[in-house]
Length: 474
Image (cartoon, rainbow, N blue to C red):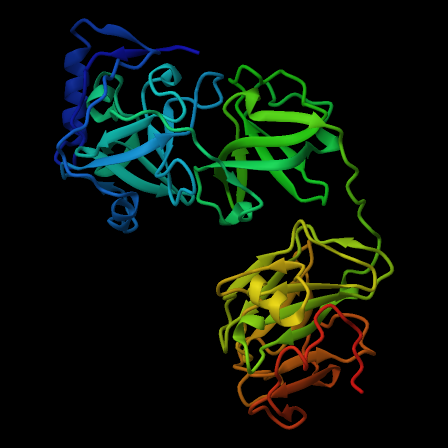
């Protein structure tokens, strides 16, 4: 898809010293001169170069950015690997690059005034970007690099001019790399770096979209796909793409694409239909169950005195049906914080009828200590990794508060909801969640809690029962 660009002025330096009135004067002057039409299709040819300019890493580059557009004045070079392709028109006037061919930490959108870049910079090409004179900004969580234009003293990013593209972007003189996409099994989509290449396996488009094409004829469009557990994602396609009118694939398989941000949600953008490999039959996802959400609640929280790696949090389903926890969120509020400190999206997880769901802070230690695997591992400063004086909230897929442990805004130390070096266990007669903390619903062990709790440290595994509820004490 080629577009023409009126190249009346080869390039206007874009820095704060140029004023709006000067720009008007230049435009007026040019209107009396001849203009040359340059097709903004094939980018200028770029032979490989290994410049002597100093290299800068992605980490060091983005560390310079504060909160406003950053003008890059130093003669430095950034290296990256091309992941995008505009061959099918689903990317336009841009290159997407990432810092490593596998396990990348950063992705970057390079704005251009050139299309058909796939022929000069195919996927896997290692490129070197000369940064001097360009600008860096962060938009909706993603990093963008481009030329800087200033109007009314307000700088903004625009595409690198077609005529200067070969000056700023050159191929490195190393062999192209075979890129290895992130697997969603390694990390959840919302934890992967934006603008990096990913692969999702076992996917199928939702039934509601099967009779549609990949995009509407007039607008960029998101179609939804899901795994067999009902966890859903968005596939974004341009109405200018070659496959816009193609019918949605009815099979199941893998999707390779680039992670983008669409508001607060993560979406996937493919390069061509070859990024879809649907060779398997569709699976049947679990239908929504008409059952009260508050039948799912927090049943046990562990902070063992002898092994912090054995910490966990357990949910229980008191209902008569298995539930798919798509859209459910478990939150932790550290100490007396009124704000969420960490949260876990439970989408993709299931909880059996009269069964539990155990989330461990450290999967290896958990299995070694308790002799069984956790249902999910949420490492780091997660909801499962509490030191016993935090508060917790369980939200349904509608965003409603279903269950609460502790009092948000109150540090649990020396209170009736402390479980430091101990355990919080829901009493067996409790069969639904509560939107306000009631200590009479819990047994609590700790090292210094208030009246109504037992000041006796608990050790793993003997003092805990992950995966078993109700668990009446003997």
